Image (cartoon, rainbow, N blue to C red):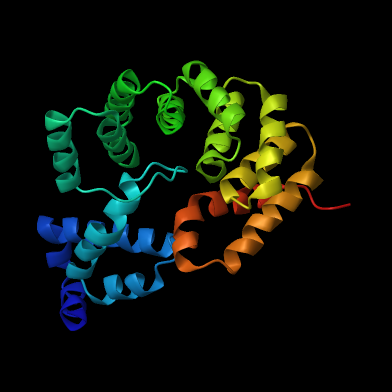
Amino acid sequence: MFASLLTLLANWSFVFTNPVWLVMTAFQLWMLVHAIRSREWLWAVFIFIGWGVSAFLYFIFVYRESASAATGFELPGAQSRARIQQLQAKIHHLDNAYHHFQLGDVYFQKGKFVEAEKCYRAAMEREPNDIDTRAHLGQCLLRLKRPAEARPLLDAVCRENPKHDFGYSLMAYAETLTALNETDAALNIWQRVVEHHSYPRAKVQLAELYLAKNQPELARVELNDVVTDDMHAPTFQRKRDRVWVRRAKTLRNSLPPRP
C-alpha cells in the first residue's frame, strides 16, 4: 500500500483532479492528526503506512467511540444499539424504574441528554427516592445547561452521601455551583474532592478557580500534579483523562513564571 501511495504522489495531476482521492486524503489526515493528539502512536503508524483501510478502522474502533462519549463524565460502559433495544423491550414488558434508569445511562453515555432526561424522569416517577437516579438526572440537567434545576438534586444527593459514585456526584455539584456563579461554594467542594481523590477533572477545575481568584501558585500545584500523574498512569486512564490533561498543560503554560 505504501508503495502505491508513493506512485500516486508522483502523479500530481491525478492527486488534484480525482475527487475520491482528495476525500480519502482529507479523511486520512484527519484520522492521523487525531491519533497523534490522542497519543495513539501505533495507530498513527498504521494510518500513515496503510492508506485508507487503517484510517477507516481507526475511525470505527477508536475515534467514533471517543467522540460519542460525554466529555468529562464517566457513567458505566460503552453501550450498543442491541443494549438499547434490549432495555426498551424490558421496559415494554416490565416498566420498572431500574430499566428506565439503565436506559437513561445508555443515552447519557452516548451524549443524548434529552433522551436521558426522559428516562431518568420516568424512573423517578416509579421510584422517586432512588439516589442514583436523582444524581444522574442532576448531571444530565447540568449537561443540558440547566444548572438551576440540577442544583437541588445534586445538593440533596451529596448531603445524603458525599462519596456517591466515587465522588463524581460531588464533582457534578461543584460544576453546577460554578455554572451558577457560586464560585466560593464551588471552591470548597473542589477542595473536598481533591482531599480524597486525584481526579484530573477536579484538580484542573480547582486550579481554574484559584486562577480566577488570583492565586496562581495554588493553581500551579494542582496542574503539576495532573501532568505528573499522567506520566505514570496506565493507558486506559490516560485515554479517559486526556481532555483534562491537555487542559492542565495549556493552563500551566499560561502561568506567570515564579519570582
